[in-house]
Image (cartoon, rainbow, N blue to C red; front, side, top):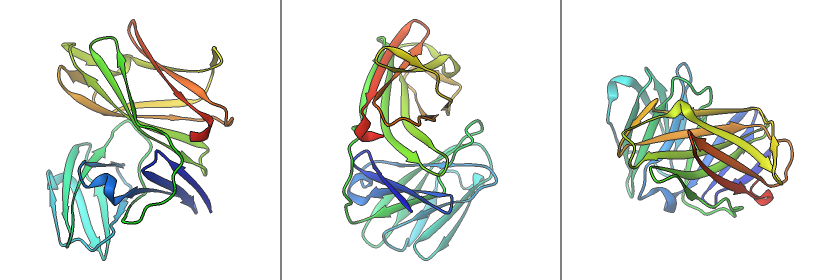
Length: 231
């Protein structure tokens, strides 16, 4: 079993090819927890307590079953919705993301009440010109697949429309461009003014040296540095 700690608030490891993402309870009480789903696959949310009631924003698009402290979710279509889970002590909000384009999904999401030691990847935000904003949420590593996954949000502040396919990324180290195999997925194809879309960057990077991710949209550029302690 390999263990990796990421973002100061979650912990991920794999066992027999199953990736697990662990969130600390104090980090999810006041904001939605993203759960990435895939058609034909089942994702499981394992809570810190037994759920008493579950409310789905769009129940027609999800098959949900409860087994003790586990909530099994199977998407029936490509849709973004929310799910409220009432427990004895807590109310949690989950954002269910069923993407048509992304091949990646969360196998198991664990909510734990005890803290674990964490290695820091600090959440950060960057501006792409004056009209776009990138918010980097978390970085995790999947050892079985040898890939890193960076979750982010893209917000359209001023532009009339933003076509997400025009968002590009380059990898650099010490000024040199790295040709890394990667996959960039954004939930909305067109982002209207004032809207925010979730995104995921998956890349393969065998080295543990720091690198920069350079995002561009048309003539606008922005970058973020990932240090070696987060890899």
